[in-house]
Length: 127
Image 1 (cartoon, rainbow, N blue to C red):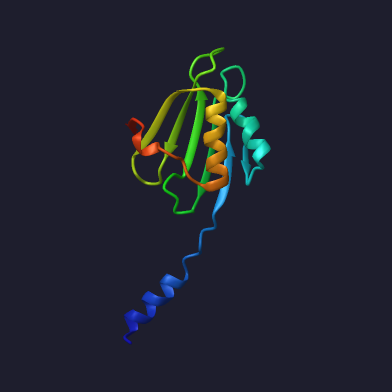
Image 2: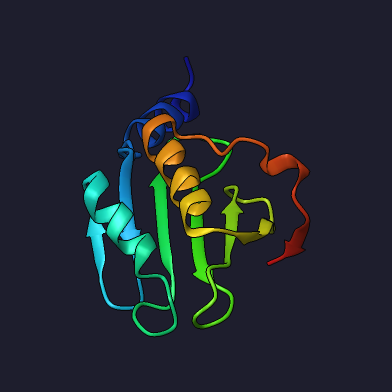
């Protein structure tokens, strides 16, 4: 083992491991490791009259999708836009025209199982 091998090993050991965690954000607040009830409430309030959006992320998890975000498209109309963001891909997957119940179900599945079913078939936008 040469001297450079010694330094290479010690620099690799110095990198701290990043822990997985949940983060719930709205334009009003950010909650680390929220309960399901807090997530459900935030999605229900993702309307122009209250919070403008609800975003739920599961970070440092190596999941296919790292963050989902919901926003009501038009004030007073029960129609939501759901965005699924994979880590480091440069695009978002979009599902428009969802009801509040459908949107909550996507959030619930993501919260429970850390996945978003069918997102690969949604239209995409570059970030």
